[in-house]
Image (cartoon, rainbow, N blue to C red):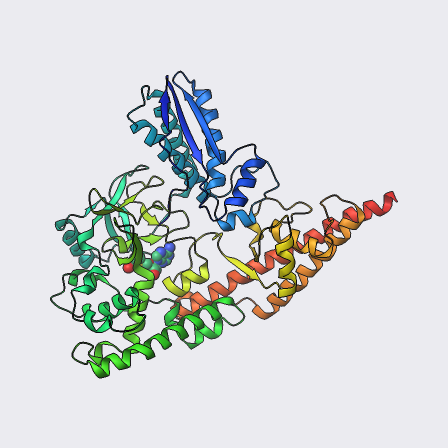
Length: 556
Ligand SMILES: C[S@@+](CC[C@H](N)C(=O)[O-])C[C@H]1O[C@@H](n2cnc3c(N)ncnc32)[C@H](O)[C@@H]1O
């Protein structure tokens, strides 16, 4: 679930034929200082009033939209975009497809609230502004229509039953379920869906949340356990409920896979294939954590209360199945009381993830209808797979907890860099940076490979330069270029070691390889691609700097 980052205020009003839209960076934003600096560097304040004249021409509307978008893009930047963005390059307009869709949608919601405001007299210019935004969203995502292959032999009978059951209980859907190559089941639009329209609406009455366990037989025993979380209670409840023939959710449990195939189920060969990668650590740590949780809780419950916790339903493999269910299928839902609860949402659980999702803002119960709605942030054509964003996750997280590697360039695939404690002290003193952790990602995601940039993250380069010379600046004087050379050579050495640890590229044939080994090898090859791009950036950078240095020396 993601919140709209633009603050809508009561001041979006009409005064004498002019509509004023207020666009504001919230002081609660986690990156308030960085975004404020960025806004100011582009001549904006943290709170801007945009006036839309009743008699605005289409050119004036385009100018107002451009101004709002420039502000909205900065307000909607996430941590990774801020870190990797070319902050000092004033020409940056387009940060990422995600950011652009978010910026457009957040401006759209401000315009919509102005249109629906009682005080608006002349809605024509606002309507034109709204149309212009919707047109831009359509243009932006035209290229991103996902080509998918269906398995037409799979009849989806259980899934159809679930959809019918949902509809009988008040769910509204404009989707059907199909078997998608490489992604299990997925949801397909049954009609053209426009920005802002609701693809799916699920009533609270069929959502599985903590309220259910209060009335179950496991509750009185679980609530006596010190420090047990509601999530763990729900997990233990679901291990038993999936076998309950009289469960209200029997149809839902019947649609769940027998095996989830996430990183938590990786076998020994797959784990071995991950040698040298961070994913190895992530999976091992997650499994160790779950093992100790299981050992602490389950044997005691089964021994002391076998009637409520039958041992045959609470084996380790069944526990892992339930963990995988909750990790890969649950959603965080904000209820009308303002509390965030982890829930299983029947039907919505068929929606797959995409790096270019149609639905981003979901997960807040509409108190008027007591339903959870899935509105579109970008259009979805009939027959197209409708996808969600599960969150801005790295591929290692998606493999560990969801069991897949997303198609396309994942901007959240970063390799964190260990900066030792002595050096870290200096980062905090570093006025330019503000970043206390550093990382790299595939340099093909950057559009600035010039000298002093090289496709590498500016905060990392600045930190390494300042660690060598606090007075360094990006002018091509000999001392600066010498520092630049050292920085690039150091980075090259670090990443050469990393590449050596990863070893040579593995080749696997999908047909004859176990799913987990195939995924592990794909992941390791992705890591190699990232490290290799950094090495190439350093090599190219060293040549650029050498060239400039020889010019400096020739002048002397
Ligand atoms: C919430 S469920 C979505 C429905 C699921 N495909 C099914 O058949 O039940 C999440 C799971 O779907 C699969 N999945 C989601 N997005 C995917 C994607 N982009 N590529 C491959 N698999 C995906 C993964 O197995 C993930 O754990």
